[in-house]
Length: 178
Image (cartoon, rainbow, N blue to C red):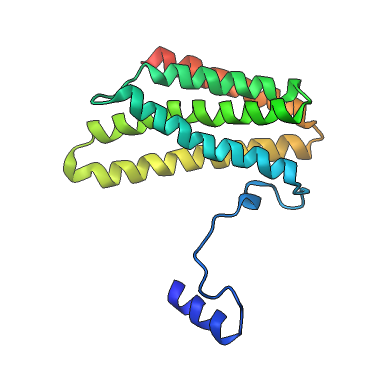
């Protein structure tokens, strides 16, 4: 537990024993990949812009679940994925990652709200846990696909094209199901 870790850290004289936990953006990179300030800024832009997308989804939805945001978010994520391998400018990369995160928020927030709304109150926790499990399993599967493609010698630009095609398929499916 945290208290135990803090006690051990304090007894060992670590100066950070009482510091609050902080998420590390470095955890967003594969093991062995060089972590540069430029890459960290791109990831930070995507992570924090997801919050922007969540805030926008809340503002657009107000007192209802705005499902019209879902296809907009899905299409925006797909467009951002398509754009990333086509540009070389660090500034444009940052803007694209901001768009990716913002559209991601517009996509995910209404869907999660819909799941919560439709779940029976006594089953809501189990439904949300199942939803989170499925989302994380899919992210892990896509990470596996990415790792397989990279280990097979596929360049990162080509990997983004594959991810764009998968995202496009997901966008078409999402729009079809809504």
